[in-house]
Structures are given as structure tokens and as C-alpha cells.
Length: 262
Image (cartoon, rainbow, N blue to C red; front, side):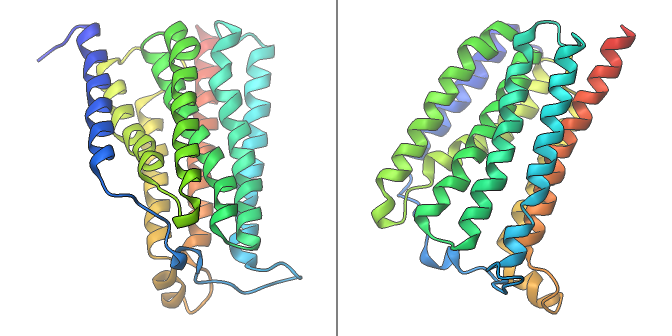
């Protein structure tokens, strides 16, 4: 069965509306106090929770490398229009902020500090979704209309969560934007195969590595115990999630080579 472009976009919007309505009727999802009790709390060189803090370094490294890649591509006029680079620039800035925010949070885990970790992650998801939508559907609509709209939704989700800080927050809308991105991005690649900067293969790698990171997060203590205290699941989560960021860099470098040839 084939659909025209308007029908495909309607399906994506309808999916979001349905998920949004379902989210409203789901009970509040607070962060439990036990969430902040990570398996590996060992200090090293005066740094508390050393493993979970230092494992954020790859985010800073790949974020900086990604920024350099995008800036070079812009300078070499690889992007067909300068504004095509905006989602990628903001994405890698968000990744660097993840490194800083997550490191700060893990120095002394608490609900108040957790927001400095969540906010840039949410921004990163918004940028990634915008980048794929703009590349596959329409650059003007994706970057100049969709991105500000998603950013507004993201700010709304963040402020809603923050308003419930006294009872542990409310992760419903934060989770909604992440889950919708996971579901909608493969649909966008399927509906709109034409591409310039993005590829299906790299998207699946990005989502796969990030999904694996979430598994490590869930089994933080079990992994720590099974590895005799060598490394925890949460520390591995940071390393594995950073690989997803590196895949974005690889994808852009592939686009750079391809566009040069063409």
C-alpha cells in the first residue's frame, strides 16, 4: 500500500496526537529516591562516583568532534544551504551540555541536579528528529517550523516535570518525546526514502546503540555485580550512548564524501 506525501505526514501527526492523549491519562511518573542510588559510588582522585562522572568524557569529545565536522562542512559549502546545518550544530552543542550536566549530576545525584542532565538530552532528541525530518521531507518546514514547535513542546515538558519537583518530578512528557522519536524516525525513513545527509543504516545504528545504553542503565547493579565490581551498567551506558553520537558524525562524513562526488 502506498500513500501520498500529505497522508504520510498526517500519519506522523496522528501518531503523536494519539500518544500525547494516552500520556495525559497515564498516572504521574515520578523519579523515585532509589533512582539516584547507583551501583558504583566509589571515589577516585577525590572525585565521588568516579566511574559515572568520568564516563561522560566521550560525550564532550564526540560533541566537539561533531561541531568541528559540521563547521568544516559549512565552510566547504557541503550543505546545500547554510541553515541545513543548524539541527546538527545544535545537536552537538546539546551533546557537550549532556557531558557537563551529567557529570555535575553524578558528582552528587539528586532530583534537582537531574534536570541539568535531562534538558540537553531532550534537546538532542529534538535536533535529531528535526534533522531527519528536514532531510527527508522538507528543509524549510523541518528547520524553520517544526524545530521551533518541537523546542516549545520540549520546554513545556521540561517545565511540567520541574513543576512536580517536590514530589519527584513527572517523566510522562519527557518520555513521550523520546519514545515518539524512536517510533517516528524509522517511519520517516520508510515513508520518505529520498535523502541528502541521513541514511537508514546510520539511523538504525543510532537507535540500536541508544537502546542498548538504556538496557545497561536498567541493569546497572546486576552488571556491576556480575563483573565483580569492575564497571557498572550505568557507566557502560554512558560509553555506549556516546557511540550513538559518533555514528551521527560518521553519517555526516559519509554525506560529505557523497556530496563532493556529486
